[in-house]
Image (cartoon, rainbow, N blue to C red; front, top):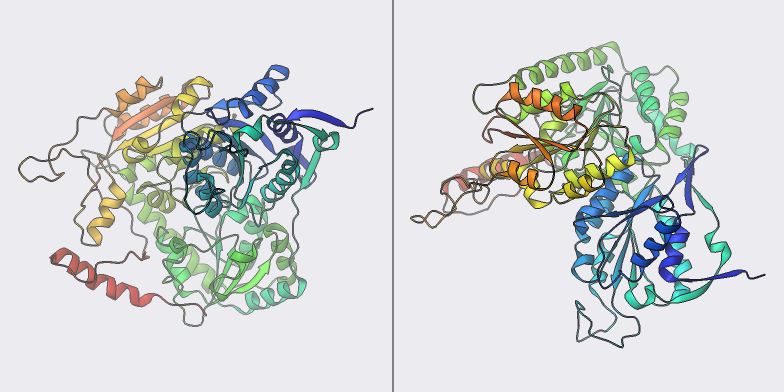
Length: 625
């Protein structure tokens, strides 16, 4: 009886992936649920043939989705994996050359956000007989470097399979990183196009079911005790909750811990929604795009407890937010790299289990009534600020008022998706999540074009939910092709396209640094001035979406917008709501800063004035040593 099976490298990959599972808390789930891909000469005869063979045998074993843009395919995989709490993902296959390098932005997004995606870019011939092949990079100093080496910098794991017998080690290494919550990100296995079609006698045990346990790492007991002592003696503790709370399913543990001990909770973009609606310790987003309530409490905190956050510059207001001269930090994180930031006490462990243990250690210790009363007052003040900001105005609606309507209309199980422009800041401040998974904003890499592709992946991961992609005209023009994929797969999305005729966020930023909104408006080039300051472009984005097979409802003003949103949510097919907004409308103040350097010398008065402001604002920055 043979203990081997003869398959091509590509057939072996597909068969292997179909047998990989994750398990956490006793629950098993498929690790790789399918492939996105675009075929070319690098993979059509390899992974393309293998996926066809698999589909003909069993269309559910390893589903294939035809993407329209390689970057979009990776974004969809990231959206899928984030929605599944990083326990499941999708694979992406591309041809060599531009097909492969188109994935690099998506890979960077996944790794920056610690999201597992599995990438199979095709590569040049391992045997080198036809060199240089179409799209091959030639370098005079080396013959073993290809364009796929660019993935090394943005991948959590990278390997290249030059020979068939290298495949098992590459696959097992890839699965290890995909399922490691501390190290996960983009996992890249480059596949030379000739190796993809080579046959090999594989041991049958390679294709047996394999379950990868995702552990709940326990923190060191002595370190936890030290953290508990710091928390017990703090007068003004403050929690920064990040995505690690979401992925660890530590929502209930955090809600109970913060209420029992009287510690307010500010959230990063990835952590928003971790507390139930109306929770008394929920003070909203924190940092450069945070609420005044969270930022005032953070500024005065004598102990900042980071839970599952990587403390990005937006979260720390470029290290200017935590202003108490005696502030200390406790960093609870599954990743040692993040746990040591801001010179904090490093508590490496699972968020849920560590919170339970800290809760037991603290007993009934907590903050006093005065501090809890201050939290309640700041929450009430912020609620008033928010309510006033979302009131509709005459004429073109503000983006803030449109988002307020969306917040009201979406049901608890619906998902709002965003990534770039001015919307993430407005969402972080004003959105009141009705459930842990309602708020899905990619703000680690803030990638223009993520919204529609990410929404597609989320919908594939959670077909029972309504998924709303909120996108500005700038992001839409960057990457909208996966609308066609949604239409072809009969996957219903709702797209809300807000048209402000340019880059509103960068326009505001440009003005604040004295650059007069240069290069941020979509305009004709004026013949007299030779500048891009002429009339508005006659671009019809609503017609563009219709041409892609999407039903479109055009809304004029807030009343029509609310009605259009309701129609789109009730529709059975992918439907877009198109609305124009006022890019100059005021946003919501948050009371925090973001470090964007201003030219030190300039002939422009606007720039000189901005430099003076910058020099004053940066005095609040500090190093936490």
